Length: 306
Image 1 (cartoon, rainbow, N blue to C red):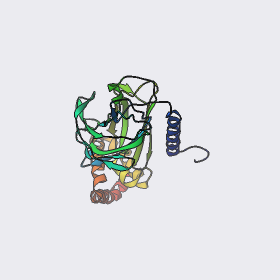
Image 2: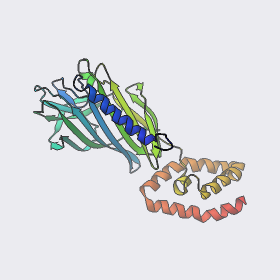
Image 3: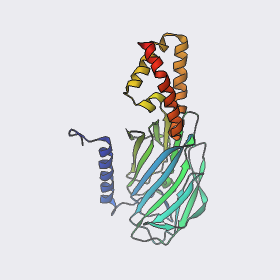
Image 4: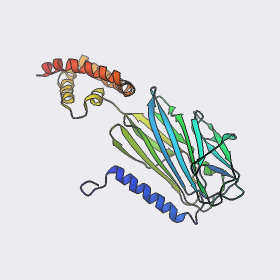
């Protein structure tokens, strides 16, 4: 808290605690059915808590997923859990209350609305499971879907569409961290826009999403669109309010912008900045080389604008 006001990060933490507390109040009376899929239904899973870290790997975006799924009741009849995963998922791990479980590929597939992946595979693991409930943890890694102007993060949240509706409350909480070189373009539950919050600290942005259903299972999947920000490679090197940036900005506005040739240089600079910034993030030596080049021409630029 600064000057009597909550910081964005503290606000997210408090909201998260309130959600978990709120769900706990309903655990004794509410049933839930989302991801994983218990078979045969029903079982009571009031809370899904997902943490996703998205990083740049070889020029593309790659996600590390970890989800905790809290069951407070599992009927004796439930002998199998199924879980949809992305087609290219790797390093898949499943555990029950911290103990690693064996899993296998299911013969069942999961249907989505995305044209790139109309169906995705599912994994499964067998019981018996404790009647009093447990926490399943599922982890895996996968690449994001790459489109010409955006990246798509997909999560199969809507497994409840496979089962009958009955009174329950289900809450899914997502904490998604991603490079601040990107921004959230939109968040959807299938074709419906969904609320979200984003705050940025340094090179990392955090996206917070809460999905909740009070009178039935969650039946729609999470789709997040990320797009690259317009980037300035000089800001990545020197910082937003540095003296070097002030000099370069002055040169751009008062020298380059006064001629068609200079305006074309400005256009090319911003066109290529995102790719160069991405390369600098992956190669510190390359970033140092770029800095040395700009350092070398700064005296000439200063002389031109003085």
